[in-house]
Image (cartoon, rainbow, N blue to C red):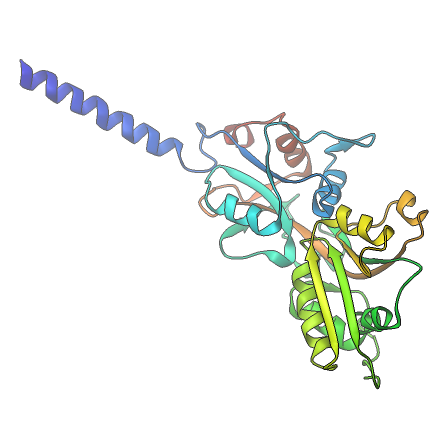
Length: 285
């Protein structure tokens, strides 16, 4: 009798473990969706919620159950480690750790953003105030030159001016430039800054990854020379004396775990996921 009871318990445990294993794969009927969003003030979040209809009448309706990440890299790591997760990042920050789904049947590619076919795209901008230094102004000229735009293309972003003139090196430029803002813009800005500093031994460039909103505020308060933003400036920010220069375009990739079976989502499905109207993957199949 004891052997029969032990055998029965073993069978029950085996089936229970099998059931748990089946429910763990992303996109499975038993899998709740883990929503990963960026923090308030993130330019990526501002652009995403507006483009996907999550924001209505200036109200961000991101579900209160969303897990909030403070940077692009954290979103990638979180989604890569959770088979039921979905998030969004700069298209230029895509890696093999996660999978970008199609949006309305369109892949997140540079060509599709340039053609206007991909629904989730936004500008990368730099903001300056009325105390722009000669050195900071020249650095922006470098970004917009053929040299700077080539770096933007090499890093996977979309150039603004494919016919830009080559940069002309100046004599005697030196000093320090402080940039603050978007964690999405910062990686490509660092590459551009390193290239620029190679031309001028006496130039120092400090890049602070504080988020778009914080970077814009720092520029208004003149705590930095240049603000980095992954969204366009708002009217009230321009009214406070800021000037905007678009340096590149970028797509926002909607990402899921590599083990998730989902390959394509509509804009409406994405809206429903991030507002909490749809909470499990089964509803999307």
